[in-house]
View 1 (cartoon, rainbow, N blue to C red):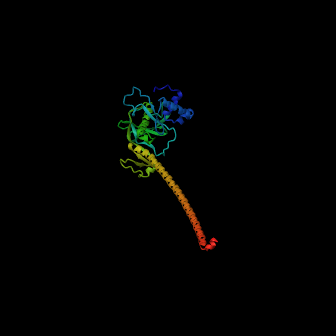
View 2 (view 1 turned 180 degrees about the horizontal axis):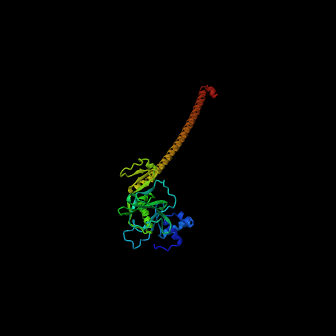
View 3 (view 1 turned 60 degrees about the horizontal axis):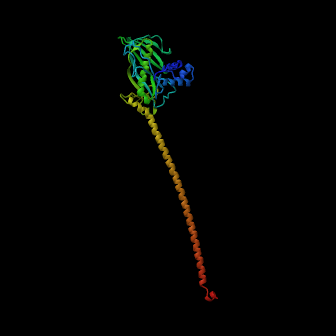
Length: 352
C-alpha cells in the first residue's frame, strides 16, 4: 500500500507509539481522548505506518525504520531478519504476569556489538522527537580497561548498556535488553527478535551521536520462564541440571518454570489450557454422571410408585374376590337351607 501523507497529529501519535509510549500515555501527553488516540492508531495500522504482532502481550507493533545513509559502509549497521524493521512492544493495558500461559522472555547474557566508530558520550540521550530516553552515567576502570556505562528507559524497563575500551585496543558495546512478556505460543518465534530489536534500538539512538556498530551477537542464551506454581511444585528449586529440558528458577523472587529449549515453549504454554480442558471434560462427565444418577433415582421412585399401585390394586382385587366369594357361599348356604326345609314336608300338606 502506498503510504498517504500524514497529518501533524497522526505523525505525533505515530512517533510517540514507536518510541514506546502506551496509548493512554499518548492521550495524556497530547491531551486527547483515549478513543481519539485509539482510532488514529487503528488508522495508522490501516495506512501501513505501524503493524501489530497478533497475540503479543504487551501489544507489539513493527515499524519500517529509515534506511541508513549511503555513506555508511555496507555491513557496519545493526540488522536482524529484516534489516529495516523494528519490533517495538508497548503496553496497552495490564499484563497478567500470573497467567500461567504468559512467558517471560529474557537473556542469560547480553548482546555484543563491535564498535567501528565511537561517538559522543555526553550526558543525556534523546530520540528523534527530542524525548529523553536515557543517559551516560559513569566510567569505571577495572583491570586496565575503561567501561562507560549508561541506561535507557524503554517500555517501562531500564535497559543498561556499556561501552568497553579494552587494554589491547578492542572496542565493544554490550546491551542488556531486560525482558519481554509474550503469550507462550508466540514466545519462541518472536522473543529473540524483539529482544534483539531492543538492543538494536539502543544503537539506533546512539547513531544520532556519531556511533557506528556491527550487527548484534548474542553472548549467552535466551530463557523462557512461566509463572506456574502448580507445575513448579513438582521440581527441585534452584537445581539446574546440565542440559535439563525444564527446571525451576527462584532468582526473580518467585518460582518459575524455565526452559532454554524453544521446542518446550509451546508445551509449557499450552499445558495449563490442556489441563483446564481435562478438568472441564471431567466436570462435564461428572455432571453427566450426576444427571444419570438423578434419572436412576427418579426411575426407582416411579418404579416403587408403580409397585405400590399394583400392590394396592392386588389387595383391592383380593378383597373384592373374598367379598364376592363370601356372598356366593352365603347365597348357596341360604338356598341349601330353603331346599332342605321344603323336601321334609308331608305330601298332603304340600298339596292340600
